[in-house]
Amino acid sequence: MVAAAIVSGVAPEAALVGSAAASTVESFTLRRVAMVPAFLLYWAYSQAESVAWLVALLIGFSSQHGVFGQHLCSLLKTRFAHAACSRPVLDDTKGAVVYLCNHRSWGDFWIDAAILGGTSFVSRLAVAPAIPFTALWGYLQGWMWFFNRNGKPKDGWLQWMTEFLRRQHSMFPNKGLVFYPEGTRSQTPFGNPIKHTGLNAIYNLGWPVQVVITTNKERLMNERKCCVSIGEQLVSSVS
Image 1: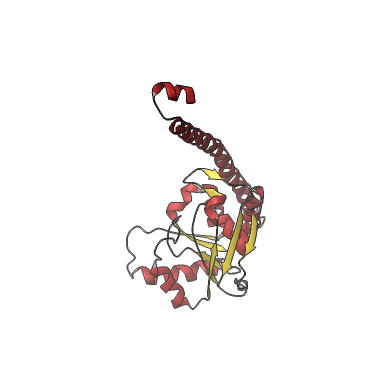
Image 2: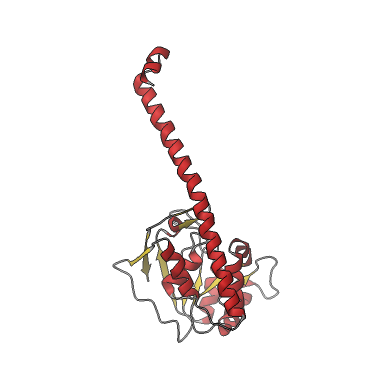
């Protein structure tokens, strides 16, 4: 490479830099290609296991999606930790507790289930096609609370959301719920602006709220880059 550069009149240092850059790009591309099958395999496994839990539910066996979440995280050797300033999680088995969590990837549904012990989740219906069998299992068991943002309710969104949350919790009353206040996934450093309607509905219901922020969710599973990571440490801070 250096000899060819001298013959062609290009500075050897520039040739070496160009060679290193090309090698780095090639290495990154190979890693990216290798991660795509791992991502697809992990996603497919999550849906296959959801089918198994769904069948168990249909034939009368109870299922714990908190255990499901812990298992999926353990497959990637995920480590969990709490920030030094973190507070204890409120007991949500004796009344509704809302956990306001950061939403970073599809994997949040089992990451937060593992962290918080199998809560309910409020989600737009548009999310269901991304995790179809998990969504169907959760919907039938009562811990996936889907809503459709198309159109406008007659009494307005605030009244509709208040009644929606009250009704859904009455059907799955023994755990709290995860609410993503941004309304959609975001991988920006500070997230997206929060949506006020859901928070106002929770305030109207008088339900206690805790903020639960967890780092590195998008590194565990990142559908935008089609990759998963092994051995990630997720650190949670609870208000």
